[in-house]
Amino acid sequence: MIECLAQEIYKFNREKIPLYGLLVLLLTMIYNGLTAGKFTRELIIYGFDSIEWIPIIIISISSAFFMMEYKNNTIIMMLYKNSSKLKIYLSKFIVIYIYTVALTTIAIIMTLLLTFLLAPSSYNWFTAYNDHSLFCDLLLNMLAVLIYCIFSIGLSFMIVMLFKSNAVAICVGLVLAFFGASVSSAVMESFPSIVEITKWNPLSMIFISQQLTRDSLKTTSNLSNPQLIFATIIYGLIFAIIGYYLFKHNKA
Image 1: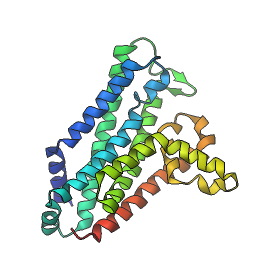
Image 2: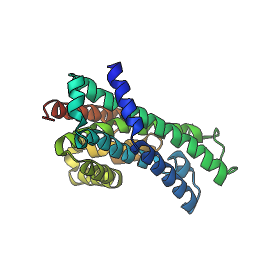
Image 3: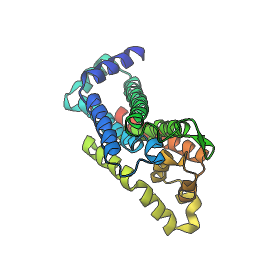
């Protein structure tokens, strides 16, 4: 497993896609900081909208990383050298998640830097506001990103195995990011009598990106924070398991 993981890290580092993902994150954060009409507390605790862009980037990167093996026909050599498809699959998942942690860490640092440059004296990072400091809320939202990206990676791997297309995975990621919450809310409002069932739909998992610091969203998602965290992780694992099943039975 260690050897397989080392090989995946080596291949990932040799690709340009991790750099592209980082550049997209930095540019979107800078753009949002410079074009914000009003420098608000929400802008800071949401990491200059990085909480929305990191999952999109991760879906794009993870799907492209998997599809690379099929486009370059290296998947056959991988299977020849390592007969365990589970080790290959897990190694890819772990590498992408390590990259997620790196992006999230960079987003936190970039948020601190942009706030210092654009509004150095407007906010106190450690003054409590509604029982949470600014810095605490930023960390909570970034923790939510790390949890949601388990969902994103699992979903991306499953879609790639289903359609053999990273374009489809990227489209799904964009739809989830920009329409997931509204569609989920519409479904629950359309069937109020079964909201105890519909609230668990996978589109509701997008609420985790903000709900940990916005209690008002609980009335929209109809899920408590522990329920949302649990459901997000479980959905991610289910998608990952389905993706592995498809990968295992795929004829390379």
